[in-house]
Length: 276
Image 1: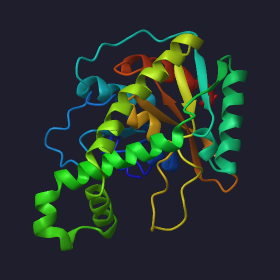
Image 2 (image 1 turned 90 degrees about the vertical axis):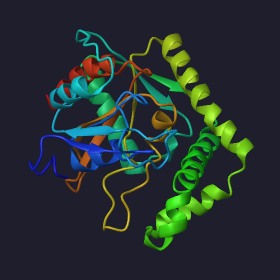
Image 3 (image 1 turned 90 degrees about the horizontal axis):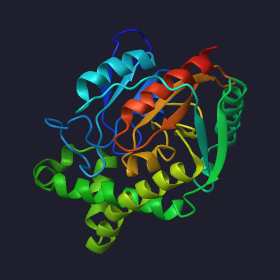
């Protein structure tokens, strides 16, 4: 909100699931969630160290790129690519999008195809419901462990939603937690293999179920960001027009783990096509 209002050219976010890509879409700005641990989390109070990320918001890809080049470990600039092959993760994950969000996504994909991008529909994440459960078990279990001492002393000061999360984390069995942690690597490998098999440069998906929800009770459902955060892959949200009510909408790009530089180079072309 500070970025879109012109109060700051750069702000930070800390998602364990979707607190970069989703709000970026709601506000019509660029949001960047790096590969897990590319930006140091030192000094940040953790919620779920296994999946916590430090991410950025800026008005455009150029601004995000400048900040990322200063903050990401071992940053190596790459030349801007000339050709892209974009993959759509068809299946139960994409089916989570609202009718409005899915219609806007398909329209944005058509706009990119008209601009010369190749797009392939790839069935993937057939086990998304289990993946969803695993990710949320990690967040809850981590939170209950990290905050155990503080919660014991200051539990009455915690927000009721955080209390519910910590209490849920206490009920997670260790073998389930271990399986959930292992699934992060499995999912990353599966997504990379599909990119190799189909010659994909990026995954393309909606960054949220739809436009920002009404009221202040909720910041929306982060489910559309979950697989990329769970796998630790770098992702970018770009502005992509508005809905019929004039609320901002976005598009989400995800690349290979530790290949954030390539993601940025490719995102410049996507940004240009969407703003044409």
